Length: 233
Image (cartoon, rainbow, N blue to C red; front, side, top):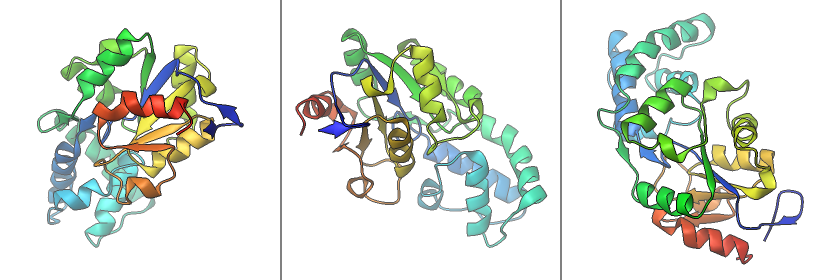
C-alpha cells in the first residue's frame, strides 16, 4: 500500500490517536453539557444519539450544531457568547459519564513495549484533554498531547498532527493516525500519513465510506491492522 507521497508504509515510529470516539466514549458527558447549556436558554434537551452525531470540529461547532438542531440557530456574537457560557459547563462534564473505549490500555501497553512513540491529536480543548487522560491514568503513554486550541486550525487541517509530530520528533511518513471520523481522514491526508478508523465512533457515515486505509472493529484489532498496512493489504 502506498500512502503520502507515494512512499510504502513501514513499521510506524509513532502513532497519533484521536480522543473522542477513539480512546474514550465521551458522548454522554458531552450531551450532558450541551443539554445544560440548552436548558439555560429554556430549550429542550437533545437525545444522546443526536448529540453524538454533532461531535467533531470543536466545541464552538458543537454549540452551533446543537442550537441549529433546537430550531434557534446562533451566529456571530450570539454564538461567541454561547461558547463563553459553555466553557465552565463543559469543564464540569468531563469524566462523570466518560468511559475508555474497549482495548485502550491493552493496545497502548502493546505499542509502548514495542518502542513506538505515541501522541494524542484532538479538537477537544487542551486542558480538557489532559484532565481526561489524567483521570484514566493514560498520560504516561503519550509524548505529545495536542488539543484543538493549541493550533490555529483544527482537524481536518493537519496542524494538530504536525505539532504532535514535532514534539515527538518523528516525520509524517513514519507515523500512523488512529481515529473514528472523516475529520481524522482529512487531517491524515493533509499531513501525508496513513489513517486507520475504528467502527463505533462518532461519525454519522459508516467508517468504510470515509476513505481510510483500513477500518478496525476496535482497538484490540489495531496491532494486526498495522501489520496489514505494512504488508500492503
